[in-house]
Length: 160
Length: 420
Image 1: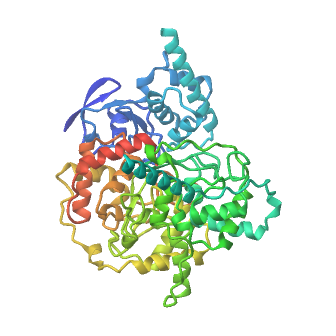
Image 2: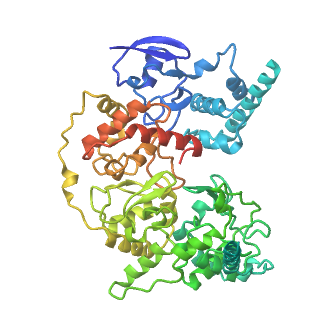
């Protein structure tokens, strides 16, 4: 059965069982490998993507729920050659150790910064709470999100 | 003309009488007591009592300093912000003598003489013994002082005149200890004292009347708490399997029970606190609460699952998203509950199951507790309604009404207040 998925602004026709988790379709069918398989139960956050502006754990979301929805993955925020603000900030602050959780962290941060452009530390902590990091880079991750917020505000001012 | 003058005089005299009658005494400020002046045993008794009263839940903001207040409690009359109950001199209880504290607990009047709003459940705390109040006072006054000014309360305009609370008190506040019931056991009486007094369980689990007072003739018939349903704790309990004293005790101490599910919303921190309370006190509370619930038939547990597990959106979403945890009979707290046992799926209103599905169950700090991802971003209102109606028909009885409207309300609440 085939289904149209809108990922990072592009429609993709995928043929997969409607109950297939989005994560498998992203990685196996669309070759978008930023979202990671961690626990498969929505408990660790490493597979986080953004759907219609809200974070979701793609390992627990079957594609049958995604007709007409807009999905954003880390690949949608920028590339190696031209990193987006969040990616720039995570590089600046060297916020990754093993890096496995970072794609999910960035996507949750992306959803936060979209609705709250200038979040407090408490808001950042609350927003990122569902995502786990085993290396213990939390302080750098928080700093990177703060930096990303600062970078986008500066960018906005420069555009004015 | 003379008639009107007489009327005016009566009104003025009435207002003056009301003013005088509702002017409580101001208790002079106290020079701060040093925390060394309290006996360690008294402080530790106060700590256990504060856990039973769940004081920290309302008097602490998320991520904020403990007992420093500032948390908004939504009421039908506006949001009431909790006050700072740390011993800070300027913004907390630093200048409160024990006499002032005892009066606030018994009568709902602050040290400086202003009336407290009944969001502070002094209608329950009035039933505390002076010794218990003394221990609570010692505990709170020996906490670190935090400077944090309480916020203004955006209540319905006339209620800014706090003296109106005096009328509420006259109507609804039954001051003082309740007599023990000699026909009941000591355990039951201890439970009644804790549940109806410090535990203030009825504040959420008893429905309230139009003036916001508990309908005492419908005690424990189920109420509301910060957007969540506080289930009935009487014969109308929605639990498919009857609660027992043992299952209640275990649930209150751990926050979950394999035959009932997880404590969530405002009940989660209640069970976190009760986990630190002596077993005998929690057992007493369970004994009293259990005596208000009539046992139910167990046939609901073994009801035939008539509904097909394929062929509808609801069934497909359940199979794809829920069944990994909720379909396999994995043991709680880490496996998901069998929905045939879940109070949330069997409750008269879908409020709680909607909130849990959208927001998930956040991981608890330092204890074994259920956790679940939220589906707020993943699922549309229509698909969620289809899923929940499927759960209801497969695991409970009659369908829910107005699921769509309830889902919209829950989404709005989550947007305003954030995750539970």
